[in-house]
Length: 156
Image 1 (cartoon, rainbow, N blue to C red):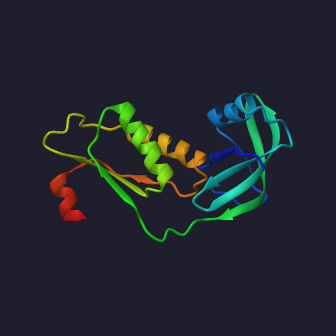
Image 2 (image 1 turned 90 degrees about the horizontal axis):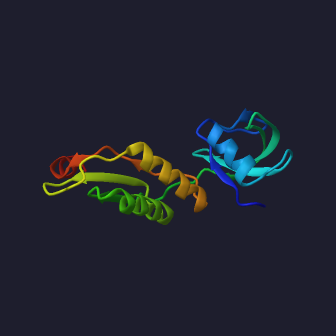
Image 3 (image 1 turned 45 degrees about the vertical axis):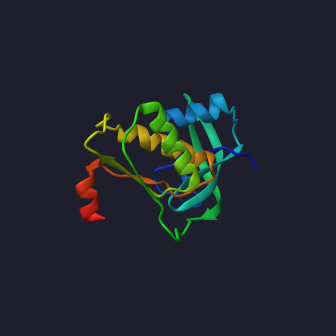
């Protein structure tokens, strides 16, 4: 089996026919150079599924789910990472590696002396998705909104 794994945010089920978005279609057709009738994997919180390329038209991939490869993972223990936001490159690296290690929730905490006060949650979600694709993980970690240390200690 190949190692092409993509996160698919919509629901997945047996015999489902759907289309990938533009960036994922580009990745499958131009980067990985899959042709019609070749297979790849899609995953989301419901599990991992094998999909077959039905057609490639106007750079959009249409696929059909063939079989389920894995059931959804039951998380026995949650692993949280509370961190103070740091410069973007280091923060991206931290999110990537922590996701690969199995962190289930990221909690950005703003301290009195925190320099970086804003985070780009959408960018961090993309990094977590990419790390999940690479590390053979099904469940994506959640990324919470920034909060102060006092709020964190009161609520958790």
